[in-house]
Length: 203
Image (cartoon, rainbow, N blue to C red; front, side):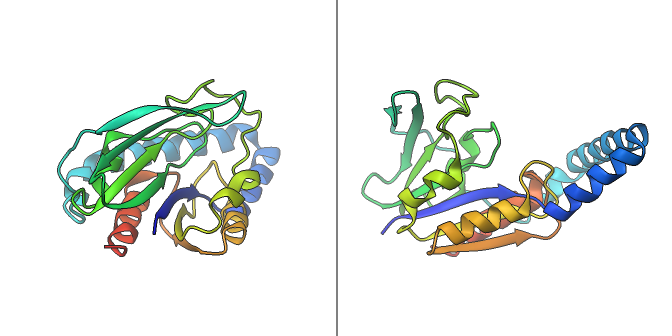
């Protein structure tokens, strides 16, 4: 049996409130937005060392297999495999938009037990062509993994992906579990910590 972990994100109502504020006073709204981003950045740097001790991750490893897989006439995705080649396969689907996998993601699961499969989604990371949005709708392609048990991790206060979209993905994947990180944004330590803990539940 294989499993899927999807890191997703954000609160639709917060976007609507933000848009209304911008219509009333765009200069004040932009100042608040950039000030908030700056404060979050400073806070995360100041606390990252202490927070990283809350959840331990596995030692760094290198993939035993990497390559490119054509998935359409337009898109070719990058993939890599690490851990135990004969272990239980686990697909790790990174968040977006435009992001990609990182070496740290290999360290979220027990490399002796799992065959860890990472890939850059269409148009992201090392996949080609980069930033291409044609034939690149996750919800439309979700049916391809609908029979695989998965967990969707979504930060409530992400500024990129509305929470309603994560819920639609959850509905499109009948064997999925949707986890909302109440104090999480688009990535960041709260989302990462929750993702790691959800992965550990499979062990």
